[in-house]
Amino acid sequence: MGEVATLTREMRLDVLALQEVPFIDSGSPLLSQVAEASGLPFVAEHVLSAAMHTSGRSGLGLVSRFPLESIARTVFPNPGLSLNGSHSFDKGMLTASLTAEGRLITVATLHMFPFHRFDRRAEDDEFAYVWEFLGKEVSRQVRGRAFVVGDLNTRRRDLIQAKGVPLTSAVAGDVDDILYGEGARRVWGKTVEGFSDHDLCVAEFALA
Image 1 (spheres, one colour):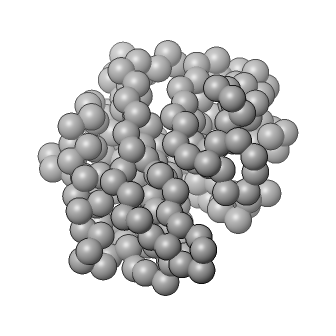
Image 2: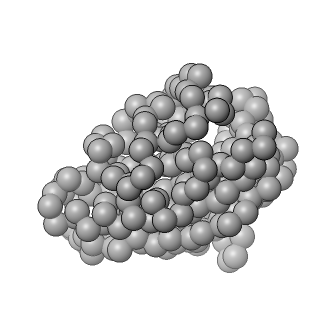
């Protein structure tokens, strides 16, 4: 928790999107500590399923410098993957709107199923309905300047087909990325190594 809070503060982030956030009872010590240490006071959360690597539950979180509004919590259709006693936990998306520099922005943080852990491919035809569901939800929920970020669990960015919301990769990480839509111009983007097996994706944008 300390490293996440330190990185957030040192990078002077405006919005932080997290996956695999640990929740105990109804709250998250991680989100509370990050919000307090970073000076980003506004928090939204989405509790999804049992945690894989710790007790309690796991989910998604948004921490923001700006008030978060129109918060939506989405659960993806679970394909029921299983292998060697393991099974797929529920995954989903957390969406919120905010206003910065007088402009409406929508940020969605998501965590897709780890198909590879079950010796499957994200692009297999039988999982097309999961990606179609995601595309429809992005099209329905996202308004204004769009940012769709998180652990996609695939290198195939083209699997997200959101009607009317064209998305471009800002970081081009491995399975994690920051995708952005029209009305935003990428200034720079990079990945930063940390404590996790997933690098932190960071990007700066100018708003049109």
